[in-house]
Length: 100
Image (cartoon, rainbow, N blue to C red; front, side, top):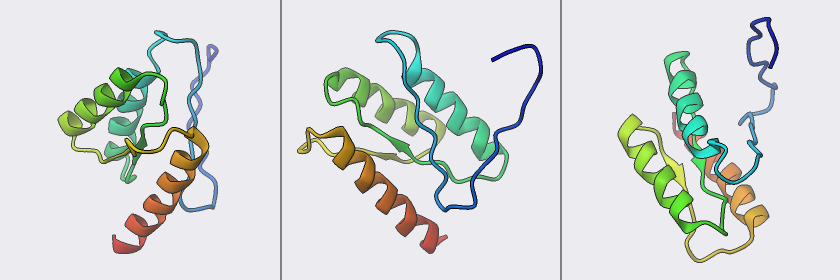
């Protein structure tokens, strides 16, 4: 945010993690898909993680957006703890990184 353009600085860790937070209805789901698509054009291999367990429609929206832009989405319909889902998504991303 601001008047100057700034590039995303990725950590040396693999995978790099970007967490989006904000008020309900502020556009986090749509923005995350747009960001993932942008990162893919820059040679990155993004993975979207569906951690909004209180809004099942947001999880489904993320799945639909991921499919539209050909970006994988990690989700777990049986888990209700966002921290567990995010940790599992990180492990999944590490496995996917090893494959590529």
